[in-house]
Length: 80
Image 1 (tube, one colour):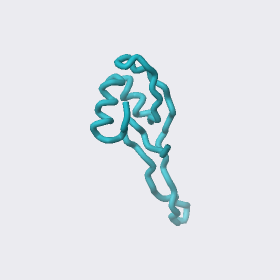
Image 2 (cartoon, one colour):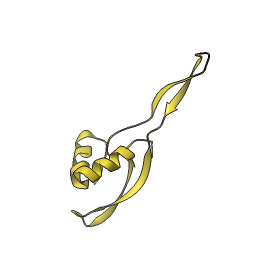
Image 3 (cartoon, helix red, strand yellow):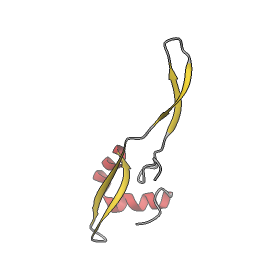
Image 4 (spheres, helix red, strand yellow):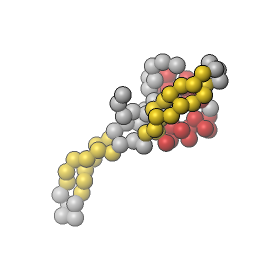
């Protein structure tokens, strides 16, 4: 499974390390991902998602069902 949030679509970004002499070398910025289980009452089951910290806050704010529908419309998630 790749390092992509299934709720927000956040993924690895590239950038530069910048030394004191301003020499630049490539680096990666990884999203803050967690593999977390959520109870989905509409289907009366538990689902496992790979979500970022921002995705967890979004689920707490809007609810799991609304967030999953939005993620499915945007193509971040295939099943559920």
